[in-house]
Image 1: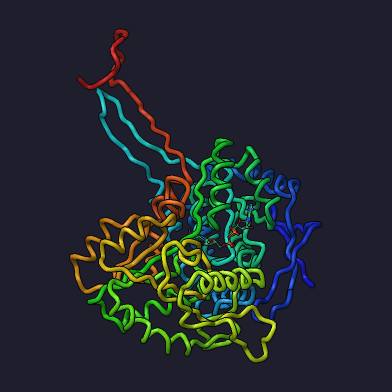
Image 2: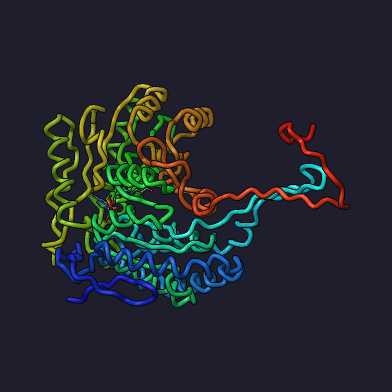
Length: 497
Ligand code: NAD
């Protein structure tokens, strides 16, 4: 079985410790991945530290040239990347292709480095005094990424960090590391100097070594909330800048006046696409009134029953398997919990079987109705193909319910009423809001982030906030008197008055 190596200083480095990587459609280990220890992380840190002085001083326009070539290589290799994602994650090829496209858009944004780093300039802030703000790189920064977008989330991070003049250490998910590795190698092929981007694979030991390394000035994390909170606490305690994006429980509000057929189509994709393993997946529909809830159930049931469940790498599937056997077990335990708590399991996907893939980690679409806010299936992130319906009496109650939840990643409202939509956008305490848009993932030139326990840190990921996260502002005030003249000492605080 082949072993995936680390990528340090442009070289492949094998680890002593390894873990299995599965094809979830077949339920089989297909390769192994090296797991970094403290010494391996130190090797990556040393490579990044050696590369930084030259990269920091490389003109942004030259750094952008590497990114333009990288973008071209990504375009040329879209299909291979999508296949690797699908093989190890299980998502369908079409879904994986969408992930690759959204990742490429982050590279396109980073290609604007000269514009993004232009700084701010003010002439004559005082007599013969000019002032400007410069945005300088931090040094070595690291990114730790989740299994569910194995190619896209790394692309949220390192193209922009590197465009800003930093050196980067990526620690992809050990569950599906191949696509991230393939993409990182394309970045080197694009002409990136050795050591500017390094990849270390691994588990908690590697992450702890990244948190502890004093040379690493910032950490970007995307994953579950407990780990996000741990990394934020431990990283900031050591003086690092940390941006840690966590889990979610995304609600869609269905108003009685909504275009129901279109809302149902949107909900099918948002709840069951990628087998529910998206941080922006809709996992709760809040129906305003029993009538709309009954109508929704009647329309959803036949569509969920018709979902084509199978190997993600086979064409024409709607839903692949869950990523691992453990993830499947976790989702199953939530379904049992929901039944025991008294929610109505309208559709039970537990008995789905895929011919020829009997060992795969498959689960059919599940639908719970009459879910109550105190149930675990409502409170916690399930991260599987399980949609919960909660019934409320008014839009105000729907907003109160969402605002009371610990997570605040994404939400949306389906309505034809502009007044209701505007009230919802104003009042809802969630970072990303859609109006008749079920997955309001911001485009690359905006920034991505949730509120409450869906994000620890001050700035959102990628886009304009990403530029601020990966740079430090330096404010420079400079005076060049026009002719030599003597100035008396001033003891009052300098001002223009
Ligand atoms: P995870 O938290 O298990 O793993 C994420 C990363 O952290 C991986 O690289 C993993 O190796 C590492 N890790 C895992 N346990 C660790 C520990 N105890 N200490 C240190 N590092 C550890 O998350 P996952 O299962 O890979 O991804 C799914 C989760 O990510 C979901 O909760 C999902 O909502 C969330 N997610 C959030 C966003 C967002 O933008 N908010 C995006 C994608 C995924």
